[in-house]
Figure 1 (cartoon, helix red, strand yellow):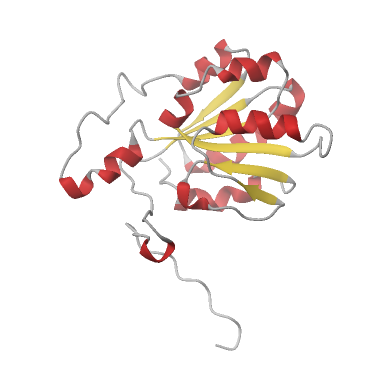
Figure 2: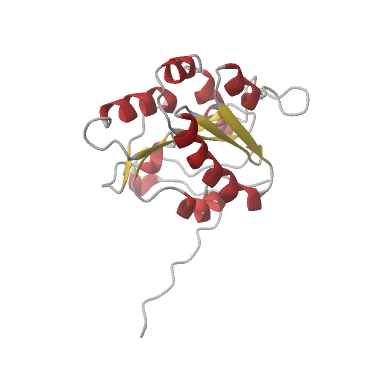
Length: 200
């Protein structure tokens, strides 16, 4: 399974160039378009608002929300609103079947209490949940399938004019970089070295 989020960065080219990308990962920050980003916790709600706001100013812009599995479930009923009003966007879910940020925040206290939300084989079938709202989705288990799934979702959102889910099953306890400030970010895995400039 893919690790999160560093291994998935290589699939960024599968996202549309002229897009609004709305990651839930708090360290993502706000950057300028063409990859305009915002970072509130409930991306499906935000994606609906952004897409509707762009209707008259930038109707061809694609909106992509990036969210964890439990952040997705808080406002999941709003997908019915998006389907009812034909609001197309792609929602990429990183699913570790955990309350991941709560689990990570508890590491220093040697706790892992009631944050595991897995049951049966994969827990909630989020693709079927999308289908129940009249939308589409795909579950991805292998890194090689991430890009084709995102490319499919972009086309599906346009053709159906509804939200489309790409649910990426990731390693269950991979830790994401975090901290209380930019210079205080903790890395849990080695940071890839940036290639040097020519002549160095």
